[in-house]
Image (cartoon, rainbow, N blue to C red; front, side, top):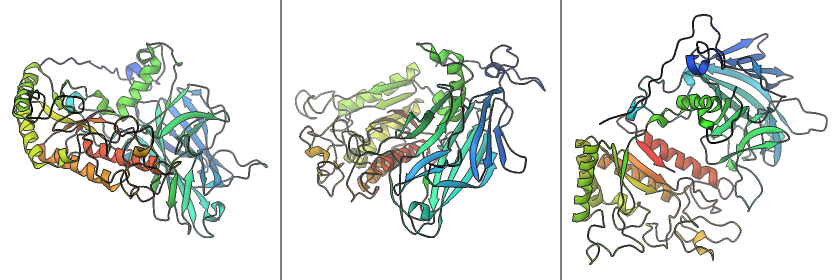
Amino acid sequence: MVRFSFLSVLIPVGAGAACTGVGDATTDWLVAGCEGPSAFEVTGDGSTFVLRNDIVERTFSVENGILATRELSMLGKQYLKGIAPETHFEVNGVDVVVGGQPAGHLDVRPRFTFGGYRSSPDSVRAGGFHFVPGTRGSRQHVAWPPRGMHVEFEHVLACDKVEAGDEGQLTLTVMYELYDGTSGFSKRLRLEHTCVEPLYVFNMTVSVLNIADKTVAFNTDAQVAEGGMEHGLHLNRFKQVAPGVLYGYGPGLSNFVAGEVFESFLSTEIVHEASYPSGSQRGMTRYGLESSRFFRTVTPQIEQNPIVLQAVCVGGRNGVPPDGEKGSENYWCYDEDGTEGLENLIEQAGSVGAEMVVLGQNMNNTWRSFVGVEYQSDANKTWFKGLVDKAKARGVEMGTYQLLLAARSAIALNQCAPGDATGKSGWDTLDFASGETCHKRSNCQGGPGCCSLCGATEFYDDLRESVLDFWEETGMTVIEQDGSASATPCANESHSGHHGLNDSVWMQYLSVRNTYHDYLQRPDGSVGYVFGM
């Protein structure tokens, strides 16, 4: 097998030499590297904090009991145009603010006050997923989790300020991370409380900065976030809980009681020295290289680029006749002809250097959904394990296609949803405006494009377990994942994984994210491979 590789050479910066931007190749941090460790310093009387590496620096300070980011610089250049809150959101209908400037005389919003800090280089976790450096051609000596510094700032507010009882407090923790050798920070929020009454949380912003346009790029690991501007501030916030149906942005926490812990999506903030480029060469500019350095550090799995062959069986709706009937020969994967064809493909894959064979749609008499009876069938497990074993003997990984949320129809042909999915007590998404399940809408007959089952249900939990059991019992290590970004707002309050419409998209996102983490974390310590959308 022939592999192409790129040799990356870092010229160490000499002792005492400062890291610089474009100009001198011996000190340019994108050329020479700038691997000094990230640090957290407490200065003055304990009210000023600096989170820094040799490229970027962020200064926080506490004034009148309120903490704020006061400075943000890269290679000595300041980027802030003014002070912004650390976050703001709504609790029980009350707008609250964390950090930033003290309230003006017309601003009656309750302010969280600074409650303390903690830091550790050993607590860095980035996205929190499993990875083993060196897997599938990635760099063997990359650090995972990445090296850097983790800092937490606590902010507190009395429960009576948000009409949640006369005792207890809300604790909002802002968690920052800075990674060695990059110009990027990450940020996430953690909320908990000891109030007597439950909380309902909306309109949460995770990143807020008062900066010039495109000097700091916000990114996120979530399908539930969006960038925007508000009162001249650049921000990264939750999306609307039900676009076109209800006003209000997420997370939409409902009946959030004392003892529970909420943690937001991860928001990354990449500081750019280079100006934002236009045109098709964007990724090849310094701006693109600054982004690339960051993402190769916090998501090293992107360096995996295996050669994949797909086997697609074409039976199903509007396709060939069922297996065994005239005209079906050589079309169904699991029959004698199909199995022989797959074995030949595996052998060919090994001979030409392909590293994966992924079985696409229609493994066994279902159309697209590829779940439920297929993953739970002992006959299918035995059949597929035979293919996996043959592939392993030739140095090839074996995987399957799976449609996660979209088109999980109970009435379209061969969708494998449970029979009660269209009832209000079933697993279908329930439309808030009409009170009907999505399959009963006049413009939806089930299937792709108009409906899905809810991902925050017992059905989805069973689905995930059946897929993971299939992985374990067959030895497969690859999955082509489809439909994971198709969470539909669901107003069914009987579902076990959410409280109704408000938190349905967020809770479905968490279910899907946990499934992806399960794919990556194999029981033997190895790393699964996921591609698709």
